[in-house]
Image 1 (cartoon, helix red, strand yellow):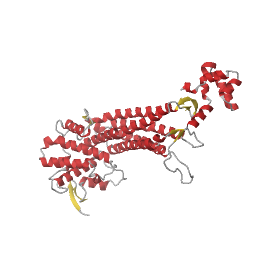
Image 2: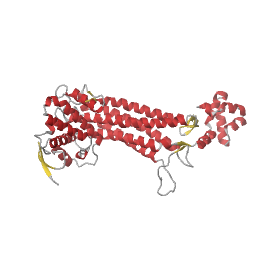
Image 3: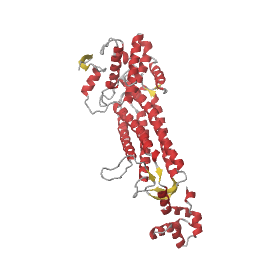
Image 4: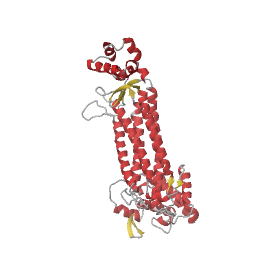
Length: 459
């Protein structure tokens, strides 16, 4: 294994020759042997898009010769395409500004561009990671800008489509089961009837409302701090650089990015990230309710509620033959717990900005993108492997509807609350039907009961 010697302001350091990173990445790799969590491919790609936009925005003032500009852009394109992803080894647990990851990108792009120009890795006279790739920038404004780009991209391209697909699948079930009457439950006790379709319509509404909250929260992240450089003043960035970067990003991504009117706030705080994470946590809460409802309604098959029949995907027990478990529901609820935990971390990290910089940036974006990825993948798996194969147990629904005491509520307008309660209590204590109890108490006739207690009219 060959090595080359890289140089920086702290001196010399050997770097494996096959690696495109340079001295600052190598120092971070050696100084932070903490955990194994690394920045996701989605984040590195977003950062690469930002670097390409910065190269394009800098081109008029940098006066690079045409060959150098083409090499810089080609290196950025390789990075964006994922061809260089093995050259981003740094862990999340590093400097809180993300400086080493910014330099990781600068060094990889510079060294690859130098190669494309016919040189070797480390030839800074050909392409310099700071003077060329990081021109007009600071880690303090590029890292949060990349955070925004990655979050917006994943929310819009993965999470929101997955949420709508799941909502549509649930809506299809709601339509099919629109006239399938069942007993309702409140306080985990029998309640008045509703249709199974109405029950599922609530899940659809929850999901679509959660998606609207997330979409609205993501809009705030379209404002970027790029051009603020170190503390928000824009030192060393030419006039108009921020707007030029945003125009290039819009061309590259299709999203309408704008330069933040106050860049100090976006370097020192990440309130938009906290807001988006809160919206993700709300979606997790909705999914938790939906997944739990469905697995409870499908509990059994003989000794549970059993109103739903869940698809059988795999054996459920290593000791009990024939057992099948609601595994998709369990996976979804577990990831919801993780998302809620991620939000606690993000909210606390976002509260820790000191003066002109929040130095919890890596953990904020790591947890947020993990939440987006888990929710996106989880909803799609739950849709395909649970909801799509759900069926209603019509016999069990009818059995419970016939046995419930809460349809007595339909008698209130005719004989009053007190007499209706007396009928319910007698039916329960004597283990007879409501109709029989009402007749025995002399509160109604058989014909009146049949006319007044019609579950189909109660929904």
